[in-house]
Amino acid sequence: MFTLTLVSAVGLFVDDRLLMGESVWVKPLKFGFAMGVYGLTLAWLLSKLSKGRRFGWWLGTFFAVAGLLDVGAVAYAAAHGTVSHFNSNAEPVAQTVRTVFSIGVGPLLLITLLIAVLVLIQRTGDRAMARALRAGLGLASASMVVALWLSNSSGATPRTVTDANGNTVSMNGGHGIGDPDGNGMFLTNWSTTGGDLRVPHFVGLHAIQVLLLITAILGVLAASHSWLRDERVRARLVGVAGLGYTGVFAVLTWQAKRGIPVTRLDQQTLIAFAGVAAFTLVTAAAVVVTARRRSASPTDAMPAGSQTGSVDPARGSGSCPGGPLAGRP
Image 1: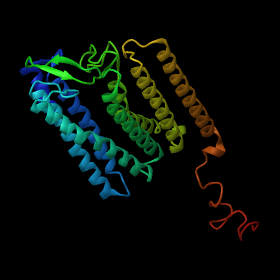
Image 2: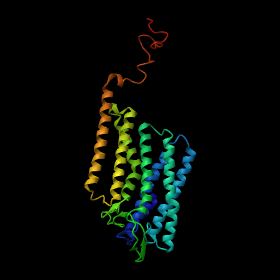
Image 3: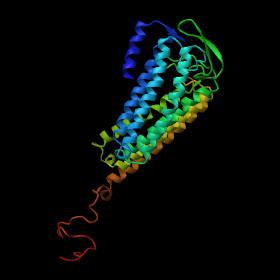
Image 4: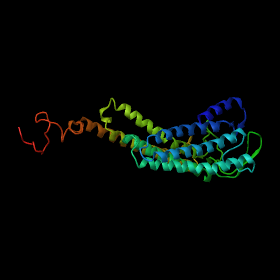
């Protein structure tokens, strides 16, 4: 995937063909990079499994093959200067791409769901990391459902466009809602003239990296903040971050389906985002305040095992409240 990204980056400069206003190599570059980052994360995650490692290895292998097919189809269409998604032409390139998509897209969603189940039934790392992985994989699965939803979006209007070779392409479906092809943003090509489900798809797909980054930052801060050394506190904060991220994903999906571009959010969407932000900040603040109070309390700050069943220097190594030596000088 990263090799494809590099090749596509070179293609931006040596190939002047344009497809719907942008270089034919922009799409393979974006797909290769996004799938490479996600695949790298899954590979790392599967190495952390304590149960079902062999099953996880096979899932990872099938995911790699399915991802190669999907992104390979995008690159194949780009090399031929034609549209990959929503192309309903009867010519060989379009037919090949459609066939590959029909084989490869479904397994990506199914395998992600199965890996999520594997993670749910076992402990992978400390509580904070486990929570980040579970929430991240859940959001990744939801983002793939959104990707499948694209083909049935309200922007699925039959129309024609011109490919990089000057040929007419019959299109059935689209990324934009309200404006099927949209008037895309720089690089992302997200629609600025209608809703675009690629936005929540991107946000959900990369939730796992964001949540793992938050987990890592909390781990680093724990070295200088005693109240963060309790993994339960870090897990709660990661959980709050996961809920907030889920709220953002849900609002973006709702906004896109209503045909509102991400560059011009309406009042309803802004109110929804404000609600998500308020909930996240208030909940996180409550967790922090509670944790700091407990850390400042001598009883709660006492190391585990120091209250019961511990060694009492005044009584000797065998002292234990209520035990056979209790009450003896």
